[in-house]
Image (cartoon, rainbow, N blue to C red; front, side, top):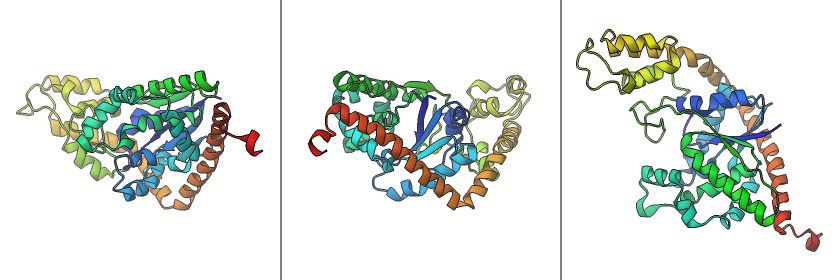
Length: 329
């Protein structure tokens, strides 16, 4: 059985962009692959180092989202990044295989630095996180990594690191393949739904919270009256209808002819979206009332994750001739 490694930063609960971009597919893939899902707390600290409580508190939030969405702990292993010593060791080793210039050319790194507005205050940990991300993946020798399109350059760097390590020291690491998922635009029309951009609908949002957010969603600024012809291809409400509403093509036709008002359109979307997520949200509430079970899932995941990644680290150290068994016995 081949291995998948995927994960999320615990900087807040997961949103519907995570769900349709990756999480829904992870639930399906856990039936076919040995699956590891990484809660990337160490990576989250690269730009939240002054607010560790935020990262701490969202470990449980993200785990609840995973389990409520259908991740099965009997089929998929949820691991906390900072509890995997092998990842830290491999990060240090891999830093020798990557130049500063190579990291700087990574388009994802450049875009995220620009988005966060670090300027001269860019933490080195954030700049170097592609190397840590490579260690995340290679610590489990993942064959496949489900990612958004913006993360493909990260997987290519991981492949380069694996290739260089194998060339210099010997064959230890798999060169992983990226499995590109879809992307859900934000409520404001931004190309990416994001917690940091405050344009997201969280999986756990109540029906009322969901309604409030959708009613504020970006629609069509050129439409002055409800019977004016609309432009659904640029409207976020119609973009979400394409996900949640069967027969959405009829909505598009009505909108183009001016036969559908934005308020009616939003209310229909609210009903459909809330109906879709109602079972997941109910399960999340039930899991939240049984945190002993949730914590046990994390404890078991840490044990298994340490075992698997520890074995791969041992192989890497032997290849690098730094296990010192000939000296220490």
